Length: 162
Image 1 (cartoon, rainbow, N blue to C red):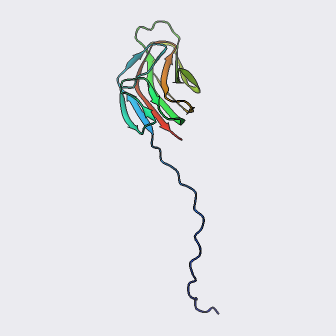
Image 2: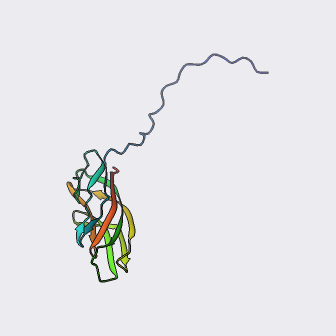
Image 3: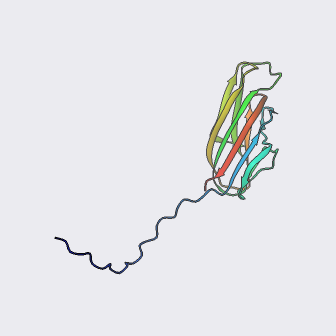
């Protein structure tokens, strides 16, 4: 047989403070271009609109190709768009190579490539990367090489991770 419950005892001492919760992303850029834009080999893609630009770690002027990184840290970047050979391209196959460049140097592993065999081909391209910025300001671009191409429906997202 069990008797009645006794009175509640005194409150104990407070426990240790828990771990800090996840932080929110406060610096990011989403830029895009919808009209078709021709880009010659050896040049960077331009993004004519900023959908969102938050914080001070990144800056981008609408219509420019360069994203300026103002704060050291680790960044995530993602690109997507559609590409086709520029009108007048007559020698095939032609190799389209997109790379991410930081201060004029390709970011290792950050590239997308397609070989076109005819003038009427269109291809979707997308790729992403995580990279560190140790010196600021730094210049970031999406660089096109291999021939002259038309790019459309392009988007670029850059997020400071930490």
